[in-house]
Image 1: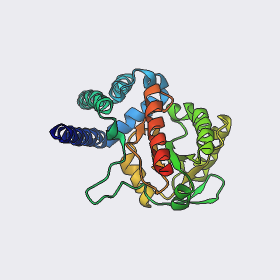
Image 2: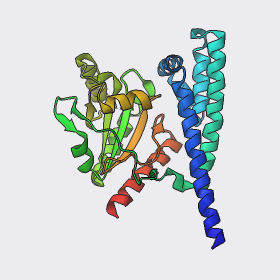
Image 3: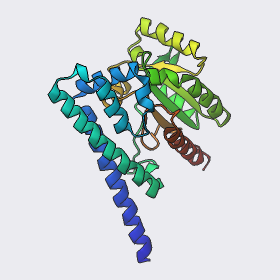
Image 4: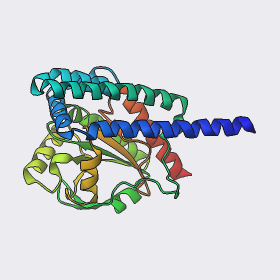
Amino acid sequence: TAGESGEMSTGEDAAATYKSLMDRENELLSENADLWEKVYLAADKNAAATEAGNNYGDFLLNTIESAKEQFTDDELELLKNSAAEIRDIEDKLTALEEQHPEILEPETDHNGGVEKFPAFTGKDLDGNTVKSDELFSANAVTVVNFWFTTCNPCVGELAELDALNKELAEKGGALIGVNAFTLGGDETAISEAKEVLAKKGATYQNVYFDSDGEAGVFTDKNIFAFPTTYVVDRSGNIVGEPIVGAVTEKNQAETLQKLIDQALAADAG
């Protein structure tokens, strides 16, 4: 009926709008990457900023404000304008997700392909070889959490991530960590990461790979903020959009759970 086709095109329009908003947000964050880097480093010393509101734009504005002495007036204006635009984008994204929950389903391109998590052969922090295809194919769902050792919001959620890993194990899934400092196999970074994980009682597997390999380049190009969490299905496909910010925050936790359930349902189907 006309009604159904009308709804379908609305859904398609919503998905297209959603994608263009995400692209714009990524564009804003990848422009002036060196300035954003300073903002993120300031956020690590100022964990309270991450709890200020659920909107990532608010978090950025608060963090910029707390680090404003590090920037020139022009840089500050540029960052604030970008963060304000990101706040508006986030509001629109949230509204679209509520109206069209199907937007969060895996994106397929016109060739029927789904974005794959980049392949890697790396190691865990104990030196055991880890191959991405074997890792993903062994699990109904794999949650991949990018973090680094001096990032307060990252370290703050390690115990919760360990609990999530145990929950996932019961459903045939797993959670793995990727500490950005350990990429390339830096021995000091590996021992520091192990120490922090042990302190937090986190026993789930953490892996690293070469910085210049496919997964290393992907990390460099796609991870603008930490922590960032991806959900990957058994075939190595990325499910939905990455979750930026701590997954201990209620909205983030709910989004993560939706993506996990989706991957599990698809695997069972």
